[in-house]
Image (cartoon, rainbow, N blue to C red; front, side):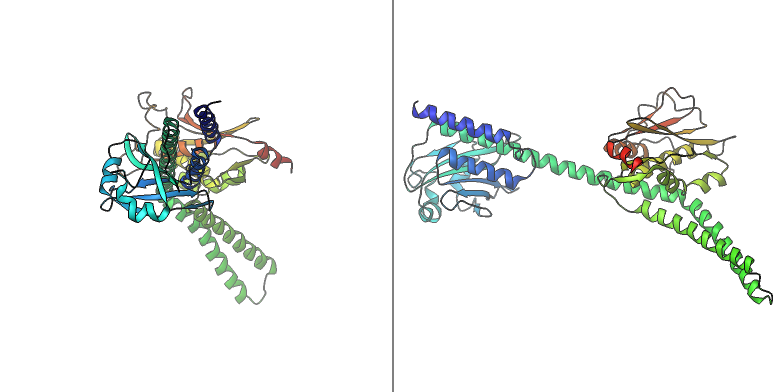
Length: 427
């Protein structure tokens, strides 16, 4: 087999190995660049291979990874400034491959001779520009140490292929950064929606806490009277103490629920949660609000234990958004009611919130899930609820939708049940 054919086989094998690696599209620049520089020195049989990227202003290139065969080490951090090497930088901007057999004599690379080439004993260079979105963003540099080398067209093609892969690495990094930003923005929207919901519930929660406080105060006054009585009634004393303890526990549960609901939590933090506890924690925020404004709230009785691996904060936020929306839609109307329903299937549970309204205008049904869209008057609601809720449900592998066949307004949340959920029932 001729020499160039041997090279081609070697290059193809190296590219195939790189293609099978998950590092390229993983978004980790450091590990991906190390993989590529090692592939370059091994396939090209050179001492040094490196990847450099421009700064934003393109005033210098910075070494992202250099692999040296003799020491088998990776290094990074060195910078080459445009003002120090103007001819080389000007060539890079022409978006052309640099193939140099004698780097000391070549007009483009000779400006490196004293400060870079001689100390490192570099004689030949093969540099290929790295492109991203049609723009040169860096360069791959391959350096022959100890002797001059005549580069082949196969060498050129191979390094160009690696340069394209570097572009993929950078694209993956940008995509991962964008995904993280989107997740951060989503969580900020969730937190904003939580605070808006807490604001809507504030009056009801205050009333919910005020009632048991009055019970405690009345029981305390009764205890004072008992203490003043010469004939202490132990049964009455016991009953009053028991009433105070139970009422204090009720307040404690409401306060803990508020703190739990208001705290920030990643949508990825999922644990097994009891659905009945989730319902109770969520409904404790809004029962009084419904009752005080004359809106009947019907809730299903959960007789059998049901567990789901979920982020309870996120799912509670979804249910509360739907309940608040339903309340706002029917409050003040004759015979207003809101109903929470639960259906359990083999691989899924369905939670629906239905109100006594006559449904949503068909012209608006395709818009209601859009961010910032709202049918509420100015100053009521943020328009974030349904879009945020849908995102949270979908992050759990479920779906949130408006039931088109219901004569009343009915939103349905479907959440998948896993093997682990089911096993929790029998453990």
